[in-house]
Length: 309
Image (cartoon, rainbow, N blue to C red; front, side, top):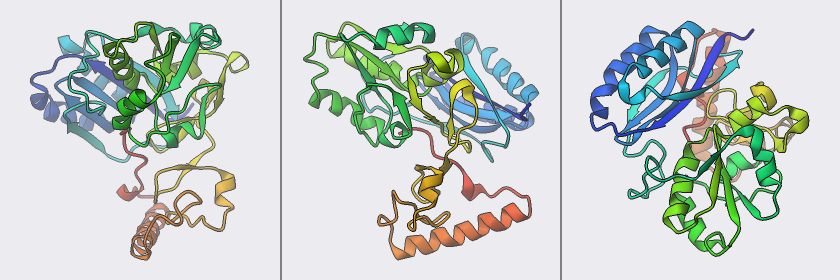
């Protein structure tokens, strides 16, 4: 059995005193040797944490002891190495940034679809399937036949909706994302725009990969995750991808064979995107990371991808 329990969680709920929750929550995580990132905002909580099983259970119990978070749901997986190297509890305007302040997922979201019912829904030719994630996530895996909006940030999603034919179609719309949180807002946004039949995958891709047997799955590829594992596959086993620490894109073994790949400095996706000064800085950082690894010590510059934008 692997050593680190990973818990992905979110909850949309009114937290007017969210600033006051920050330091006690941070201290509890540190006391339990739990690492990761949690975001607090007036609209709720979001994040992923990892650590010893006992510590993760203690932090989850601490959160659910707050009456407003008693119904908090989370998804679990395991990692062979520490997915995070430090603990952060950040205060935000939104727990997932869409830039549409009038959208309230507490009051109006799409219809939840259980993972075991998802295949039937997206196999219906009268259903439009939309991947609400960013382009660098979609490129390593998605559901067969899903539309890729080609966004680089979730802030771009409302504009993509306005520019697409989604609002003009009479078809039902099914949306999905990594853990479910972006779909809370994207489906609420579509409903606010007048789309009545909009659905989303309950628990997101992670719950689907955990629940649906691989031989029955309509998922193609791996799922990008925002920690040191980079990706996971069916049954949430650790994936095959590494990460370019220059551009934060997932990179395959094939990418590493490219002449444009320099560990920590560049990859085929970003080799012409950075200046010589930037590449020199990346090379120096990589040297420090390699030195820390030889000393069996963490290097905070080796953090995985930031939370979704």
